[in-house]
Image 1 (cartoon, rainbow, N blue to C red):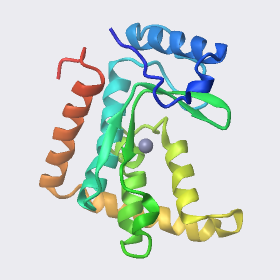
Image 2 (image 1 turned 90 degrees about the vertical axis):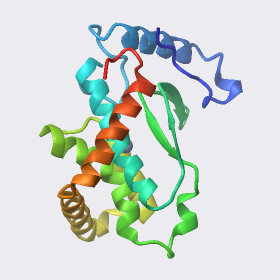
Image 3 (image 1 turned 135 degrees about the vertical axis):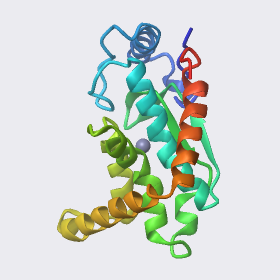
Image 4 (image 1 turned 180 degrees about the vertical axis):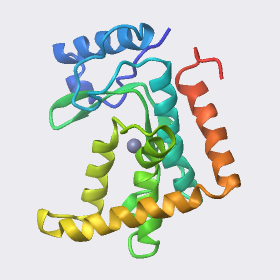
Length: 197
Ligand SMILES: [Zn+2]
């Protein structure tokens, strides 16, 4: 039986009726994947059937292996309700870097950080051939980190192409692919124990 954590919601907002409804809908959805998902801009995509659960595990694995390569610690969280800009969001999973991303700016390779931010959605798209429903949030994180404005769009496009091609290169390494597979199964077990994997 799945429950949704509201740990991230500040205590003063926990009585909000919108939160109560979102928690109820999210828990119903997690426990009965045949139902329609709760209405949230975070994941307009499909129902949370088993396939989507594995995609979510693969997505978080893609972030994880790159954060791990940089020596950064992360924590796997979810399913949970997040609270940003006075809005509640259901997140079926998330990987929280325990280091401050800004800490390393200037000291670390920009592409290592970009691979960690984008490894999740790019990997899911490469593995499944279908768009990743959670790409939007990751792109927003990247833009925030790079400080990209509308005028920098071409420079930004070049960066994205370069990151994607570097991730494709990494996938030529069987040891790297094995590491992702192992992480994905571990994450699937942690997030969705009902899956037999
Ligand atoms: Zn992500």
